Image 1 (cartoon, rainbow, N blue to C red):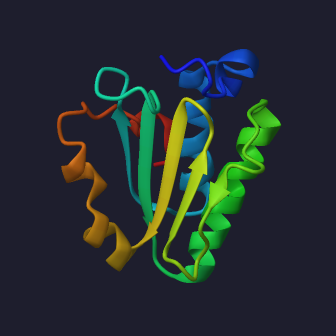
Image 2 (cartoon, rainbow, N blue to C red):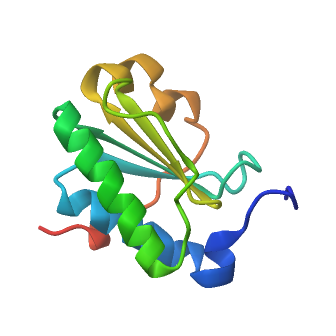
Length: 131
């Protein structure tokens, strides 16, 4: 594992608990088609990739803001590790062991991260979401 990579989530909150925080924050803002991929055996970049989409640009920003705030309240620092905005159609939030991508619909289809990382197993996150 890359020692230079910031391990905030391990130091302040377990990365599995942080995954739950991220998914709940996204679900709270009605993110669509939330997917979590276990990247631990595929790449050293992160243990999990969480991918989702928003219905419009306002929701995209709201989802990203809610995830960053919830992660920070849980002890992870997202500030300074956020790239993109609603204008670009993709916001990336780097939480160390978890990398979150919030897409607009067209951008998600274009980049198709789930296919790119198809060798990574999906994580069952259904228990983290409201019914």
